[in-house]
Amino acid sequence: PGMGSATARAASSLDATAVLAFVLFGGMVLTVANLIVDILYAMVDPRIRLT
Image (cartoon, rainbow, N blue to C red; front, side):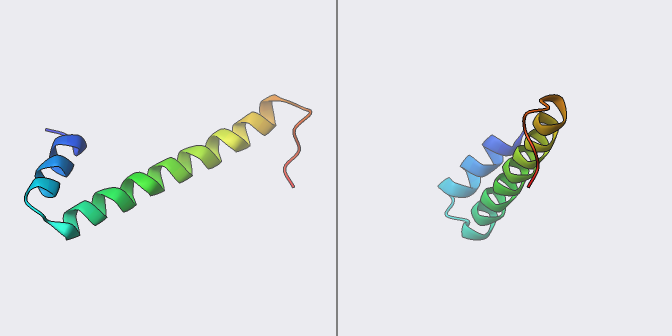
């Protein structure tokens, strides 16, 4: 069970809709995580300013 095995199963069965959903979900998770880390980094390090 998990996202990796579900993605591999979808890719091996040529389920384009499921593969696209997994890729979009992964991209959104990475984007939100990067945004949160950038904001936290700016809060921790006073030399960094959000512009």
